[in-house]
Image (cartoon, rainbow, N blue to C red; front, top):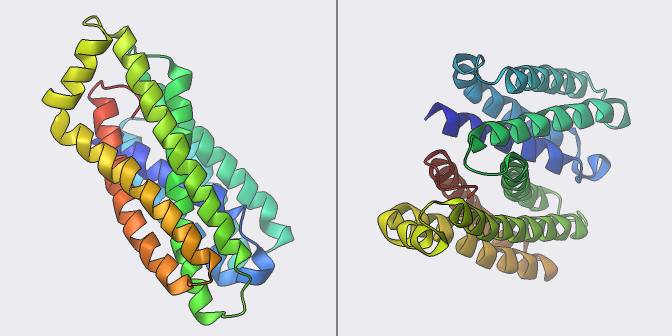
Length: 262
């Protein structure tokens, strides 16, 4: 449970911080960045007790996470002291990089002897991109309810980012299944049968909630944003957040259980 919590909450924080780099500070305002940075800080704090307990097994990830918390706190302080914008953008970049490195290290540690460690790390970063895109995108949708003249291109940019992240997760899932199957002593065919039947309860839910549902929502969000139906796009993103969160929890459970990068 600890490994799953560490991976999920850290990757969510990393995704939010990275996604903020795509958001225009001048148009969205200080509070948008404060809200998202605080969410990232909260997720890092939730992961902290589990990470402290596992620090001896992954000291590198522990210190990276500690640096992430410190940098996010400094970034929040700069925003609240009205030093946001360009003066604090370096802190945001540093916090995003540190948290992404912690996420990649978490993926590296999960791999164990199950496969190529770099593949697990890249998969963890793709998960962070999806979680960040859908979370920040959903909050961005709310800004159009109070700033009716906000340029629709911002929401469309996040809709495209979300769609690319879903595609990356789907590609990693397929590649992960093939790689794990080829490495399995029972062979690829037997491994896939085991995933589809013996672990089918979790695997098919992972596929539906983590890939198929979010992929359908990605197209709907883009089309509704294109016609400037921002309320509909925000409602769809609400559903997408629920699907993605559940799907990513299942992905981490399957990865920890030895199913490969999911």
